[in-house]
Length: 233
Image 1 (cartoon, rainbow, N blue to C red):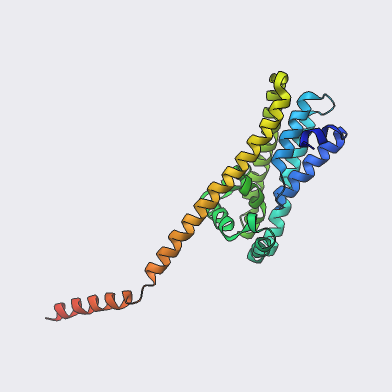
Image 2 (image 1 turned 90 degrees about the vertical axis):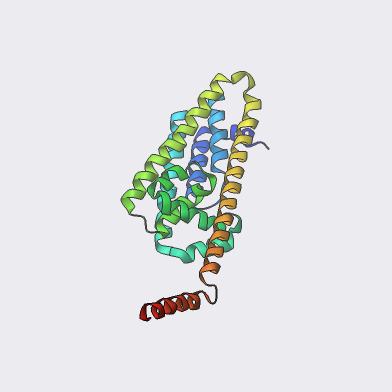
């Protein structure tokens, strides 16, 4: 059954709860299709007056903020072993390449990685737990978490809702398009991040191998010795 068709069969309160819980669990670090559920629910709200887009956006934002906060607490307590354990349970989402990519994003962007991570499928799962593992200052995390949760969840709900209103004549076809776009966006971002992680790992391994080449230290000592001999002459 189509996600939107299934959502049409449940009460509005259940839709609010479903969106909040799914997005919350995804933000906590459990790989779930939070973006797909949110897009489908926003489209449904544009067709049925029973679902209030303001309540829907608020529930989505609350789920994102609370989920990320719990993920931060778990990551701060669990540390690196937690990522290793998650890598064994969810290798497609928490494998070494994914972790390396996310860590580099955090090292480069800091709290902005939490904010903009909302808009990238992989980082949306990683943001909370990894911020805790890397012991990001809580005030930075909570600021980026709240702003990112509101902008992503509320903004997505508003955009999809109003597009659905404008495109009412071809809304059913658009619902499939919306889901397809969400899926392609998530898949594309994961592929790009994975390729970047592999490339960075290869470069790091090459640099480490070059630094550890046998004879390099001896060559430097020989050159230093020759220089000293010339100075003595």
